[in-house]
Length: 424
DNA sequence: TCTGGGGTCCTAGGACCC
DNA sequence: TCTGGGGTCCTAGGACCC
Image 1: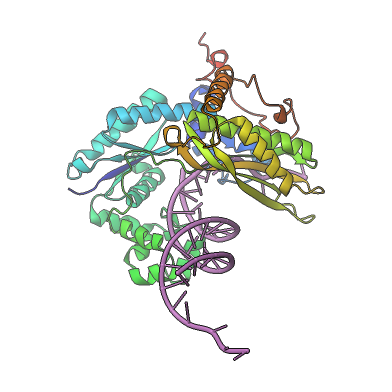
Image 2 (image 1 turned 180 degrees about the vertical axis):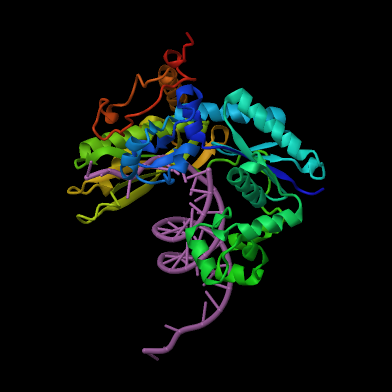
């Protein structure tokens, strides 16, 4: 049986989420900012048409925002995650096998239909159902490999005449599209690799697909030769029907204002440690290793910068906030240097194991472990409803100036009772 | 003045061992 | 004074993705 994948990708996902409950914004350009209101991370089609690039710092487009009456939002991940879940549930309703690839994309395994001429009709049906049930528009690319499905999807986005669906099962259509596409737009080819390919005389996706494999593998990496095989229609990247186990968990933020003393830095690190532990428990995991990192701004050229990290094993596999905060505070004291203006700090938990495979520690009384579990369950239960209501001393009291800026955040329309839209 | 956060995989090089 | 070869494991850093 031939492989056949479809890639469903939401259009301008975050910006589209902001538009769902704001019909007044239907034809207005909308942009969404990263955490700390730093960069533009999503643009509606109207905003793209105004030339606002992906990832540009907000301050560089502020004049455009005023001139064209662009609606600006801080990112509201609670809302986007909820809408994403609805989109994915819809896909699971319509397709036999769904692999959720990111917050706004999913692969469908359509191999049983690889010779079915009506596949584009199914894709149309999926698009219209997702649109009707969630308010989100999507584009769909169909092809025998994931990399080609990605490319088909890009074509569906770029050319309106496709009506949002590109079927790339036919080798002749593959060749036609690959000749049009620059190699730099292929999935897995980033800036560095594109530049190196260019020095080898490879500019288009077609040239990449037809280049000498051995030369690619030697001059670049094994991944590039895999990508090449994918472009030739050979599926190297498998369909993953169950999500891979998480290997690490990071919690970090840029600060709203620069941090110059250890007290607020310690509060921030304790807060991130506490959030990371919460997520660990929510996913029923334990961690065996913790890393703390802090750094000054890489864009600040006025003085010497500083960036450092320290990692250490936790005494045993744990998800108890107290253990994690204690070690985090200790690690911070090792890397802290007075005299710098810090922009960011964070924690990383690694060497993760699931609850049932985390071995009890030899020197850790079973009763103590039960007490720890019960205490954390109680804390999580109290905090479950919205704003954090109980926290650890090291986190300090709320309102530290290090907390991130989020000046233009929209309501939690779908996940907080007070914020549910009212129709009058 | 103002530049995100969270992931994975690969590779090179050092430490260590026999 | 002369001083091999090969293997594993770990870590840091690079590259890429959304």
